[in-house]
Length: 320
Ligand code: ACO
Image (cartoon, rainbow, N blue to C red; front, side, top):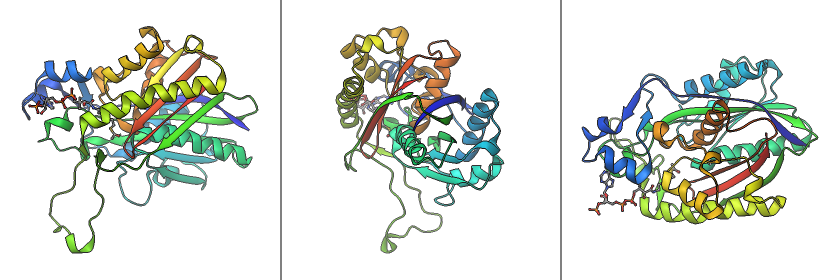
């Protein structure tokens, strides 16, 4: 049993943070950020948490597909910024969306989270016990970013994206390629400390730490390998692919992949200019924006790729 994407939705919180805003907070400039990353602005949630963003993205997908939440058999949320350590965002949404008391699970694979969540959904459909489900990527990364660190605070933004999937005999998902390599030093957010290091109740919260250059080198190596693996599994060439929805971390990483495969810029989705890096949410947001712009149509072959903390990386090739 395979799966079909019935509908997709996304949500970006109203607040924005421009490069000029950031240049008043740290020693940076619009020119530096744009030329190194392609980012001009990003959305920032001030009074909404990850479950709120996820809820609005899910409702957008359900409304667009005219789908009753009672018909859903599972919900999976990819996130590294849940409202609570537990309960999961997925469990919170089960109630808020008015779903039956079904399977609800959060997944943490950092910026590859949405790709991992799709693979998990495919596994659920393969059991034959699930007919329809929600897969969401949602993040409020501005909660975990140190706004005194110019190396990281210019890169990230908030948002959420969602797919409704349904079991299908037709192999819409034609290839999947997923990997992990436990390298903590280059990209991490510390969890609770061991007892002897306990923070005071009002002690500092940990922030996201990143060795940008190392992650950049990893990404420009991993992304083309994933795309090639997906093409090899299907026998397609890059010309057969109608749209490439790659994790939105840095325009230079997207451009490198485009150059390697001779991808025309009209097939390469980029939301970086106004979203920045939204981790697990970036692929479904970019997919939704591409749908709105007519870059993706029913029947198109789409490559989606994620990469990030873990390290993790992976992709899917799907016929929409
Ligand atoms: N403004 C101005 N100067 C800056 C800024 C800034 N915002 N940030 C860094 N600099 C400085 C550095 O301090 C350094 O100065 P120095 O030479 O005096 O030491 C100089 O700019 C050059 O810095 P580099 O690190 O060489 O810049 P680089 O060209 O590598 O770009 C960047 C940095 C944008 C972070 C890039 O390395 C990158 O995109 N890395 C990948 C990030 C990524 O893909 N993350 C995805 C995963 S995220 C997740 O999983 C949660």
